[in-house]
Length: 199
Image (cartoon, rainbow, N blue to C red):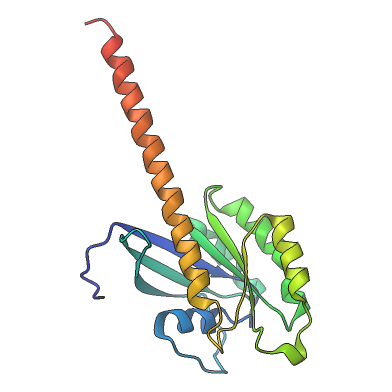
């Protein structure tokens, strides 16, 4: 699909998580269907566009932001929450610290992002079973406690990459549609009340 395609909405999605959890690889697998073992750490931000067809036939333009996970970039990241519709929060199943830090990321998201934002949790690098430090059950427990959907994924083997993005985009579309419906309903109710007034 070309960049001139007609779209119904434009969504902004952030990929968040500690450095080296595989955010860039995850994004590249989704947008380009490519994978390479070694990437330089993202400095600041990078972003890509992708046109996505939803289950209902609508086409949306998605702006995907790949963010740096290093601590020194956390304050910069805060400004990019503005206008974001969704977040993919990623940890590395072979690195327990990245799992433990998910709660810190969630606290920052709650402080900086809209309360209407859609979030999913991704447990990346499940292809590295021999060096796994975080079990599937631990991930599911964290997701349940945080009231988030979770996907066990592998950017390398292309497991649950497209599925996680599609799930989030469908969820964002549902939220945006609900907001539009609510606003239209309020507008119509206000018009009815105005008509009741005296001339």
